[in-house]
Structures are given as structure tokens and as C-alpha cells.
Length: 357
Image (cartoon, rainbow, N blue to C red; front, top):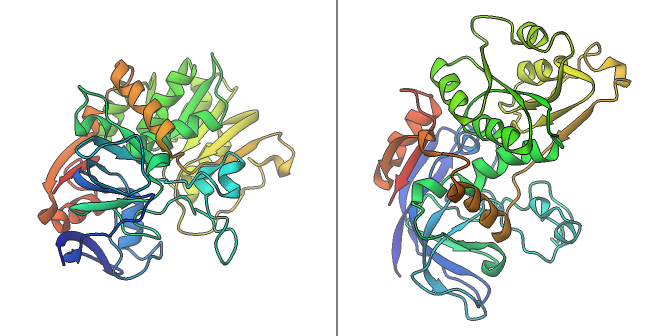
């Protein structure tokens, strides 16, 4: 049996590199040889035991690779072709997909609908922090990488870019809007860029790390606020002349940032929540206006599928967004445990790491 190296969840606090069989594929699947992948904040939630997955699961959900083998029923692709697949791999046929919400592709299971069902890699099936990856429903999910784009240029498309842009798209940002983005980690940076591309003329980035605030300026923020030096709510109220923002995007997943995002909304404004929360949220009575403020609170799980990936790669190819500054560290797959230690502890100014088998 042919074997490969893979990063495997063992128990809370332990993701280790192990030998596993190279995946078998079915008629509608593809096997890709992974050329570059990365670690996501959600993987850290898995590492810490804050998001449960099966022991022995290969983690990771942001693949760039080359088609190694195609299922017998897969058409329109060829072996050796460079591709990406979204972190979300909708089947295309489920009730959720047919309703236009492929990210929640959980219908049709023996136990009914399951939240986050469209997120399969490193969640319900083996993921891509490995030498090889089985991609289900390949014709719905494989997107060819345009000539001229490097692995690192498209590495954020499967999840981070799709998620950040979704936060702006779902909020319905209009030309002339003022948008505040709380937390300028990888998703928040992409949300700032997405807000600008959607038509916002004032984008305010909030974080506590000066390095991230500097990158936020390069990604589209007009103003940056260091939350370690001042109260970001008070500063945003001042910057908007007391009006508040049209849209606040929460990109960290904490009670404090969620509440701050709610407090800076204008009447009738929209809170777009992208963070992954590890405990219950509380709605503060005042900022929530006792439920009478005409606010909208929206959540998003990154859209997937080949058309979404094509669009995102077209944005990158157009030069309207430069994701280069986001890859701050590079590791080989056999160094994955060191990469997790760095990324999970947010040391050395890390934003995203590139992992190459």
C-alpha cells in the first residue's frame, strides 16, 4: 500500500506528522498532489480541542496542487493540471446547494442537516496538510490556476480570501459606505480589502499589533486604530462625527470585538460576523437597542466551489489585491509541528505560513 506523510489530529494539544495510506478515489473524485498549503486559525481551534474532530483525521483545508489522478466519471480536467479547491466543497445536489447556500451542504445525510456541512476537508474527511488529497465532487470543486499565478498568490483563495470577501458581500456594502473591520488578522485583512472593492470609501481597521495595522493600510484601510492605545469605539465614533459606521465586520471571534462592532453601528447598520467563537455570545442591551435598532447581524462561512475560486483568482490576477504580504513564514511539511507552534502562539509577527510537502 502506497503511503504519504500527513498532519494528523491525535488529541487536544497534539497534531503530529504521521504516515497514512494515499487516499483512494471514487468515480467523481480527484486525487491531487499537494504543492502548497497553509495553517488556518480554525486548525488552531482543532489543535486546542475547541472544535471537535475525529482522532486520526488529517487536518487542513487550503490546498494548491496538481491533479495526480482523476475518477472515471470526471470530465473537463487532465492529470498534471494545476488546481485549487475551496475549503468548502459543495456537492451541488443537496437541498442547501439548491437553495444557493453550498457552504451549508449538510442535507441528505442519514441524520439530516448539519451546520458547517460544506466544510469537509480537515473536518469530516481527511484534509490537505499532507502529500496527497482526495477532492470530492471534483467537477464542482476543482478550479484551474491561471498561468502566471504562483502557488502563494492563490494560497488564500480557498478560505481566507473567500471568507473575508464574504463578510463584505453579505453585508451589502454600497458605494460611499463607512466600514470598520475589527481584527486585522488574515481574514480581517481580506475583509478590509473586500470592503474597499465593494465600494466603501472609508475603511477603518482595528487591531493591537502595529505590524498588522501597517499591512491593513496596504490592503485598503483608510484609517487604522491601535486598540492597545485607545478605545476603538470612541475613536470610531469620533472619526465618523458621531454618526457610526454603515457596516462593522467582526473578524476575531471574541465577545469584546463582537460587542465593539455592535456599539459602532449607525441606526439600521449591519454587523457582519466572521469570527469563530469558542463560547456563548451575550447581546448587550444598550448597543442592541433592546432589539429595536433596525440592525442586521449576519454570519458567513466562506463560499466554495469552482466558480467562486475562479472569481477570486481573477481578482488576484487583475492586480486589485496583493496577497504577498500575508505569507510571512515558510515551512516544509516535515516541519509542520514547528509551524503549528509558531502559528498557534502568534510569534515572530506571523500572519500566514506556506507549507510545502
